[in-house]
Length: 306
Image (tube, rainbow, N blue to C red; front, side):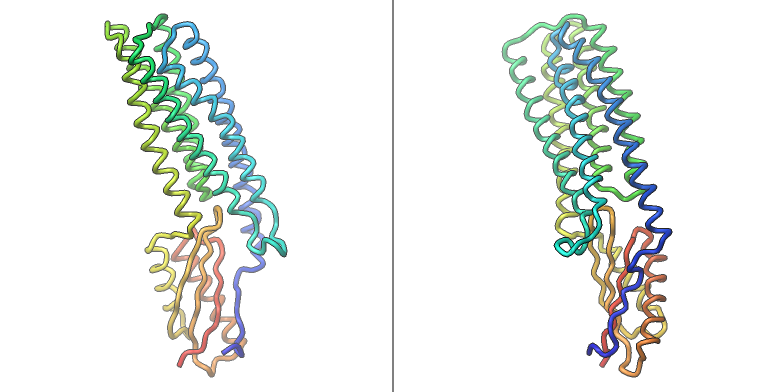
């Protein structure tokens, strides 16, 4: 039955929501810029010391950190593209560009893992020497500190603005801190006389890289495949069903970049007027937003209840 029409609450979006998204994007851009600067400095310091001492673990970590600077550029481009408004060819907008950019981050992680594994295995079998161990330990410590700082910053901002891409990039920086720690442990091992410790540390770092790479990739693929937590559907359905005038509900939800879209089919009696359906739709929108705070768009469609 189409006589009751369809109520699409919150479209166009409220001015407060649009203003919040502008602030969110500005914070995301700042987080990326700060991250790129911090990782660039840490990576250059490690690269210089690795070139002097021949530490394969430190060299892998340096290249990994410097690669993150280009990764940050990918994330920045994804955020910029996602700002484009909806059009006839893209009626839901461009927010999925952030998730596509996140796949670029995941690719960088896997490439780093392959490169770190190659360098570590190569040194393990040729038994290369490592010098300037003291300076190498200091450089690795700088890498640990720098990555921890930018990871915590990006994770805080990413969770607040619900950006899967920025959270993935924060996890990548956290991984880099472990990578730097692994390189430092390997150098300490070399300092006490274990010449093989640097190569073994590189292999351990590779394991960390693969673990985080799997987590980041699986989360981004879930977003791209419209997966949501069951609790979101359950909470939205319970909230919508509790609104007066709603006899039954069917709820769907999907992520579009940072936007969680919740669609509610609300079944009402045939005697319900269009005006009453509009009031019910607005009440459902408010109830769902309260029950699911991460929902940025709620759409209510009226269906006849028999």
